[in-house]
Length: 64
Ligand SMILES: [Zn+2]
Image 1 (cartoon, protein in one colour):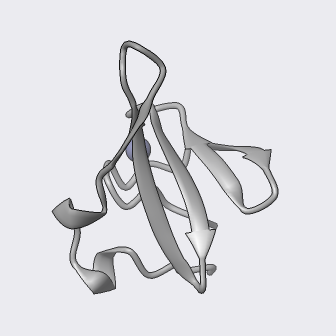
Image 2 (tube, helix red, strand yellow):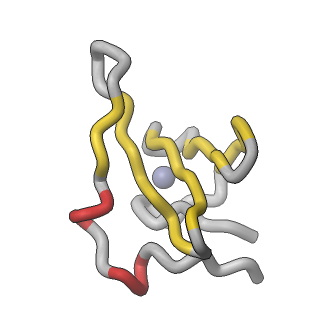
């Protein structure tokens, strides 16, 4: 089970190939080389990266 690195929630929906969306905290997650890349969707529809806010180990994809 995948967990959102931001809110630790499990309410994650698949929106594309290796792309997911957390319905709990409204961030977009994509998986690149076994790590999450996190993006926040801004009011104007653009994406801003949240990767800097997380440590490497927090971005690791844990599939249990
Ligand atoms: Zn979340």
